[in-house]
Image (cartoon, rainbow, N blue to C red; front, side, top):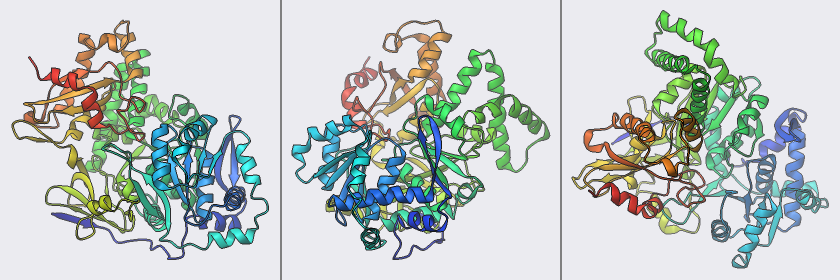
Amino acid sequence: MREFSRPVKVEVSAEARLPDTVFARAAEEPTAVALRRQESGQWRDVSCREFRDDVAALAKALIAAGIEHGDRVGLMSRTRYEWTAIDYAVWAVGAVTVPIYETSSEEQAAWILGDSGSRAVFVETAEHAERVEAVRSDLPGLAHVWQIEGNALAAFTAGGAQVGDDVLERRRTAGGVDELATLIYTSGTTGRPKGCELTHRNLLFTILNIIRGPLEEVFTLEGRSTLLFLPLAHSFARIIQIGCIESRTVLGHFPTTGPELIDTLGVYRPTFLLAVPRVFEKVYNKAEQKAVSEGRGKIFAAAADTAIAYSRALDSGRVPLALRLKHGLFAKLVYGKILAAVGGRARYAVSGGSALGTRLGHFFRGVGLTIIEGYGLTETSAPTAVNSPDRNKIGTVGGPFPGVTLRIDEDGEVLVKGDHVMRGYWGNEAATKEAFDGEGWYRTGDLGALDEDGHLSITGRKKEIIVTAGGKNVAPAVLEDRIRGHAIVSQCMVVGDNRNFISALITIDPDAFEFWRAQHNRTGTIADLVDDPDLRAAVQEAVDDANKAVSRAESVRKFTILPEDFSEEGGQMTASLKIKRHVVAKQYAAQIDALYTG
């Protein structure tokens, strides 16, 4: 059993509340830029006073609509300025925000709104409203459905015009730091999503100790800004939203991670990025594909190897002169173009959600964009461990941030204590009791190890451990993360429970497939080419690379390429891009059996 902690840096006052900073800053520096919002394709600055006024107008409309202290209010929308304004307005009246992914089905939305007992819900579009209206007969407590797009939000806001500033101020200051701020529902990989009860203390303790701790350099850069494009329904994006408000970092919103994101980053020019590993994989893969298509594939490969070697040399404390010279040459020829693609100002990126992989981590640091990995869960207000720019141990997810204690249990499970841990699951006493041990440690369900410096490495999920017929315990995450890192691969699920060996179900990245098909002069869809020898050879490269990380008994012996990618629409993925293993195992039972016959 191993344990590591760091002393708290910022104690949160009993009187603190999340919207306090919005109102205080508007009074202190009303004309300072707080956010930027996109209007007609152009970015416009939003001052502290304007943002406060928008929050206050929405809050007064909530009061006029009868939203009481402690009421739950759903919010179903893509990432946009109004998301943040509504979130802070809900908090300003002492109510509780309940995020819902905009991709959620009628059934999923109904479960979250019904289980939380939401009295109202904001939806982005008319189509979202239709989804909610379709299940409204099952939601007797839902009194209001308010739309954001069009003139609907302005009409809603006008309803609070008669509510006085004094009324809002009484409501805003009535609550305390330990009151509920939000219910964030888990992704539901193993059953019905559970609502994590996060208080104002949970969220403020987390972000204040991070922005004045491991990420202080990121959140104190001159002219700092970021563009938030991950869904704000995800706790990872949400805590960064709060971090920007608390640290006076200019915040912008963008609703998609689609192809248009790169052009937008080039215009917005953030100083740091927030993304999941898949985004960084795509940036690398597209840069490589572009170089190959232009006949510069060998130059890119040499540049990539140099960046990785340079980053590794930084860890050793000595960069040889020859390597410094090569690195300087490629900085002009290759690295500058990669950095320009994300605006040219970004020095840091924060990554979470799954493992990035050491190769990508070293590549991007060698290029000039330091990716800082962290680890956490919805139940821990998103982060619980994080690297820092000056102590960035690539291949780990960092150490506990100030005020947090990590423990590795006897069976390898990561246990957590700190004021960032949720107070429980909404209306689910049994699940809450199961989530904590007798000493109050939160059981993460993840397996990990702590090194001598307190840096945490995640090795797998406790409930996902595969036990082969020969009794070998295999953590699938190690293999899956390595295989997914290959350009041609989109998703991977390792199987082999009670089988003689380990196998894998692998899907192909649609964008990478188009490039591969052109390079190999092939026609047809992925489904047409799943047995193509060259495509299988490309996937075999990914499998061979992953097998280097494990023993022979744990290695992937066979794989099958599936004709379609996993998706949320297909039921195989959650909205936060986690694989629903039980769903995939059921849907592809025939393909799994085929791997073990003959």
